[in-house]
Image (tube, rainbow, N blue to C red; front, side):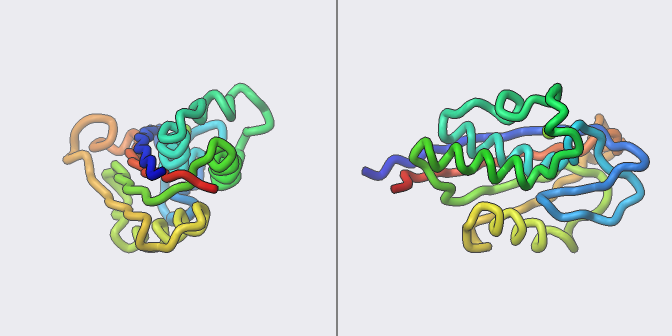
Length: 161
Ligand code: MG
């Protein structure tokens, strides 16, 4: 049986002073970080939701509610690992993921490779199965004014034995 399933994930977090900027499990040096209950890794949250969606599982907000103190300042890599176990139990394994980070600043070109490598490592995939792109907001809207950073991710999963 070759059943391919595709899923999409999207997330957005406000930028804030005095917070770390963690994207795809990689800390990026920048004067502002992302606000949120966990470490606010908007990219790992979108990756997690894309994989859960492809596997027809509950979304990240249902599995790890932000009202639960257990997930305060949580490492999103751990949430992704827990979600991946659910994906495998549902009979699927990640095949590849394609990511877009929407950020006016900082410039991510120097970090894209490290981010893709870290996501691949977390998913147990060869690096070429994870792609990371960065887009600005052209100076307008929540992204363009730097008020927020967002991520859109598409993931393909295949049956896992
Ligand atoms: Mg989030």
